[in-house]
Length: 315
Image 1 (cartoon, helix red, strand yellow):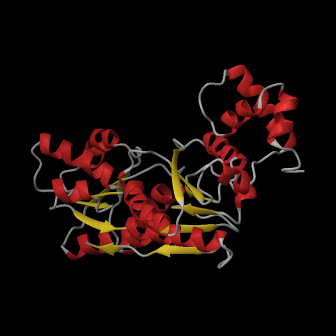
Image 2 (cartoon, rainbow, N blue to C red):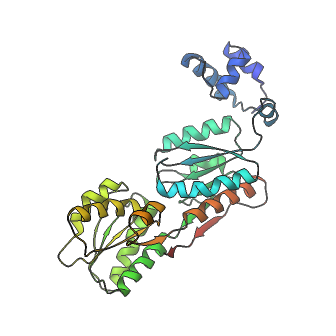
Image 3 (cartoon, rainbow, N blue to C red):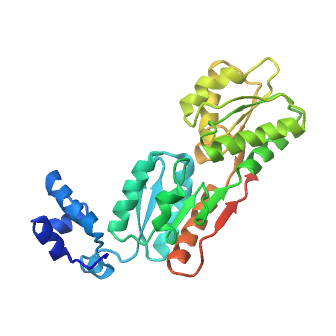
């Protein structure tokens, strides 16, 4: 069973010294790859995890949480992290940052390592491909952000509401030919839900939809604007600020200045460079605060897992 063995036992079974085992458990340098793999094999075989008291004796914080972002350069995720960190610090938690790069395999590796190090809890920026089974052992000490999952705590954005607000605003201004640049439906929230909301509005108001779903990157926004521009187009709605930045650069280069841009995000970079773009704030900062508060209360047994939806508002 977990923790029946000591570091001394792991050292004996691995054929190395206790200090070497300690360096492997703490992911420190100074250990050959072959030795590290041998120690990790023994650790995994016996389900060993260092106790909190042992961790404290090594001088480490007894309150540690992990934040797993999908991309370190994500504008929206950085806004959420900026409000998480003070919340964790205030309650005495030391946060560590990790990156998933939209890889379920990398998320699994991170969670296995965090489990071995007895981390208190995790905020995980979710994405399509992260399944309930992958997260099963973390159900009581994990909060998903931007995705929901049955039985798990989550903090999500109102994707449909954000698009509805922008379309209503554009429609009220008199726009009847509104194109859309978005994300493939393989991405459930930013992709499918936002695109479906656009299509639903067009159907309700008898507008002719015209959309393209290239992806999340700024370059994709830049390269695909031409696919949704016609002589009648008067407005362009982008599923994210990043796509809008790419689209704006294309329009500027082509000297197209009679097209109203709108996007979901309201990130500082967008507000600084393009204040003329109509934006909706999905509540990235509020989501970070809510996720941190939920995780802290959850790991301390004060609340059960629950799903929280952050309302969007027009800027």
